[in-house]
Length: 233
Image 1 (cartoon, rainbow, N blue to C red):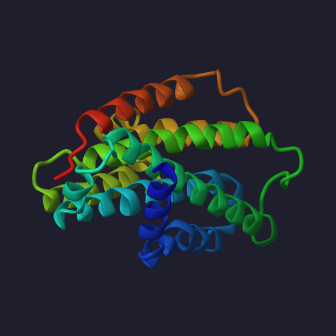
Image 2 (image 1 turned 90 degrees about the horizontal axis):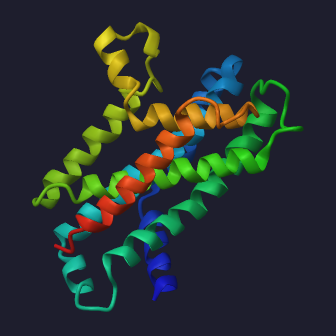
């Protein structure tokens, strides 16, 4: 059953080529446009890839499945909400790892990566990336189920996704934001995830500061919420 659901989720992704572009193509474009800060931008662009898979792919496709009543039919099978969330997470994680490796290889030959790739603590970085992904995926699923109306939930997914990117400092420097927005930024999950990824990429101690514990706490909380508030219709 789980393998069948994983196959379903992967087929949903492949049927939306725009998500493949935003997940892989957009980070590549950003790295080409700003090659001088390639090393600083690479972990953040990989995080954007994770967010695309969690929001504009998984969460939006879930909202669409609610609209066409597909999930209502799925409810009549042995599939439970935990199965659907877990297999969706596994399928997108596989794609994330492939995309991340491609981005890292591209950056190693096309942009300036300080220190190169040799000597990186790869288990630490991919471990941090896994935790960041596990945090964002249930957030997307929770938002996709937050409202009774499926179409309204899809609109909410867009608002949350682009809101996180803007307020998270991905496209606009946090230092130039008004003080209230800078304060808000410090409480957003994207600040925890970004800080954790950059720290791991630099090979620093991820136990220093609050990034690891905050990311882990948000991940656990939203994993529980995404299953509890899952809607089959």
